[in-house]
Amino acid sequence: MNYYQIGKIVNTHGIKGEVKVQAVTDFPEKRFAVGETVYAFKNGKLVKSLIIKSHRKHKQFDLLTFEGLEDINLVEDLKQNDLKISEQQQDSLSDGEYYYHEIIGLDVYDLEGNKLGKINEIIESGANDVWVIKREGKRDLLIPAIKDVVKEIQCEDGKVIIDLLDGLDD
Image 1: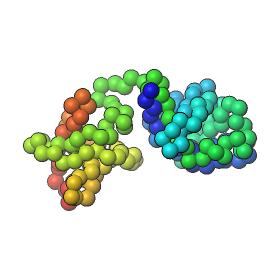
Image 2: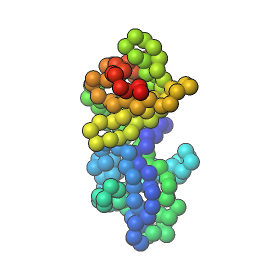
Image 3: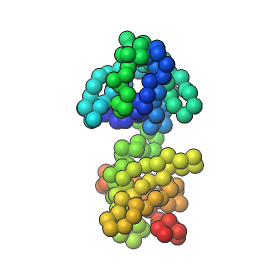
């Protein structure tokens, strides 16, 4: 079964088993809803499944408690664990919408068909996402994920075609 990351437990919060989560999902209200199941992973290995008992926002973090783990001593070992959902828990997206795991790893080509590199990471910024393109022998290329730049996404072929506008590769 495939699992996809939705957050990371960065610390505990208080003494009643609450954990501080740095979310990496566009749907935190759905992913962290009471009664939802998430999976804790440490070093890439499944540690345990967790059922969310409560969720609230605090500054830039999501604070969660899990059923049966309402004490700080029971959640200490969850610090630095990745929180993931199973493939079956994913929603279908509209045309033109993609999950990060569908974009990361795609090869990037310019309009002339020259391979520029591979998408290595996606950085969330205020206005739009920024794709980090890993290139051989050059520094990483950062491109905004906007319609003026990203012309075509072909997940089935493993590639993205972009218009490398002036100033993007300086």
